[in-house]
Length: 101
Image (tube, rainbow, N blue to C red):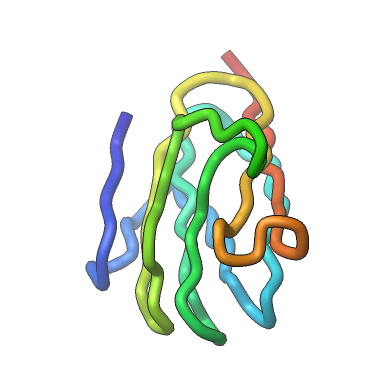
């Protein structure tokens, strides 16, 4: 699995953006091998954590995305991952569905 965080340049090719804008986490359907790039476009610090507040999965945990920060994760297996912001666990949720394989 590929994982990168920080204010680095967004990876080129095979990427899908999932901006965090106005306290909304995005739903995306992607192919295996696609990198999802989350960026905190507006608002205070955010997190991106796989699973639910009651049952985090640990598949990906992206902590402390300040405004302007980006983080990416490459999905290598098919399946569906719900995710949430730990600071706003009931209001900010999203789903990544990975197809193919």
